[in-house]
Image (tube, rainbow, N blue to C red):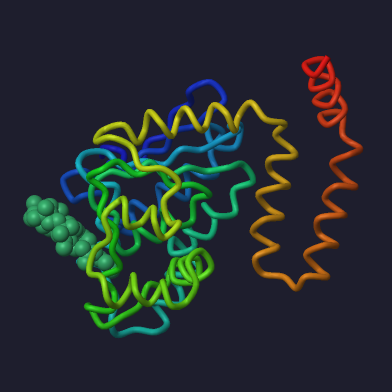
Length: 251
Ligand code: COA
């Protein structure tokens, strides 16, 4: 059986590719399962930054329409305990993640991209959440992330008023980090990933985790998280070495 998700290392980086181009990388449970396995494998675990992309003309056209479960609540609950948890697992990776997006980025595909820390889209990218048209809602963490990034009014706009957003519209809403020329999303993502991989990794990981937690916390708890994170990081050899290097550059 050909692999549906491939992982390969490029130095400190890991590139994960959804590799089901004939179905526009639709997220079947088999794809989700391979992605779960990839997240746990050494290629990802040993990397400083993960770039997620899709093979062919689309990032992903979303949940596999042939598998959407409509009539069994127990099966749906079991799904979220199993491969349906992959979106949260991807979001919870300790190292930064970038989604490199071309073509369709719909439904669960959009939700997976939203679970990345950054999104680089080429000019062909098309974002959309067709769930409501199908009588359901985005439910892989994507609706929550969308609201957190753009606020409820903009999220409703994206979900209910605009059938599709192009790359520039998504960028204007803050959903996309950068828009690049057609075919350049992966290359630009790898450039950004190189920059991230060159930063002190523990500080990067704590900064990522803190930013995600701060979005969920009160001001007081948030400030405490910042101070605790600083207190821990300031002790590290990594921070001492980085400060020395920085000092040498300043002189
Ligand atoms: N699930 C399963 N298969 C899918 C799919 C999905 N979400 N999206 C696309 N495919 C398959 C098509 O069935 C087709 O397979 P086939 O060649 O064996 O018939 C192949 O991918 C190419 O798709 P096609 O529809 O021919 O391409 P297009 O460029 O004309 O249209 C889309 C692209 C994305 C607009 C269209 O495929 C579509 O609307 N897909 C469903 C999107 C969606 O609702 N996702 C689920 C959200 S919950």
